Image 1 (tube, rainbow over the protein chains, first blue to last red):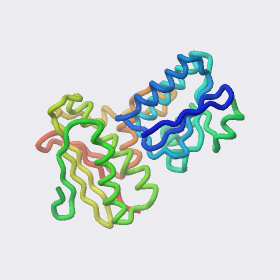
Image 2 (cartoon, rainbow over the protein chains, first blue to last red; image 1 turned 60 degrees about the horizontal axis):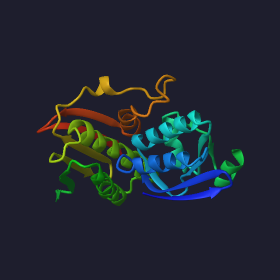
Image 3 (cartoon, helix red, strand yellow; image 1 turned 45 degrees about the horizontal axis):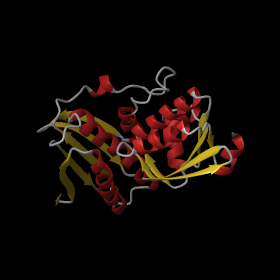
Length: 110
Length: 139
């Protein structure tokens, strides 16, 4: 997995390339926490180039969303493919996150 | 090692091994024309959960231990067995529902649930070690 980070106004966009699983989830967690430490309060995780996500990856997203809300911010998601959308529906995490079809719509939603 | 069409490998108990094992199994399922959803979701996620459980819980994330993975793939089904060196666990008792309001915000507790949701059958038994067997019929 690799992470591409960019800023769009006051939104930090983190693009996940590859699988988000137990062996690499800490990279995403630390990157978001570093951005939050630096003052970011709006974080968008873009899964346009992501592969599969396991329960550890889902858990990290839950943990980060909780942390961002504690800081008065938010973490939102974009570009889940059909398989990832199904994963979020199976776990009902689609009810916990604000999920946009595209990056543009996600950016507009903040 | 591949014996009689089945994959049978023993790897170090390290979560960094997971992606390459999953890739090998998915490739074999692709050769047997499993459908796209099964290749992109069911097989990789369920196998990752089984391997993660074996490495982190069964083997206690201990260096020096190993995990054995067997995969038999046909045009009709996939049978996976993941064996660790642990004492085993009660599959039914350990499987929680992460979708309840009280569990939805938890960081953990989705692994066994996903195995059940994504596979047709999940079993646990004693072999030489503690074995989790996952069965998926090809669509």
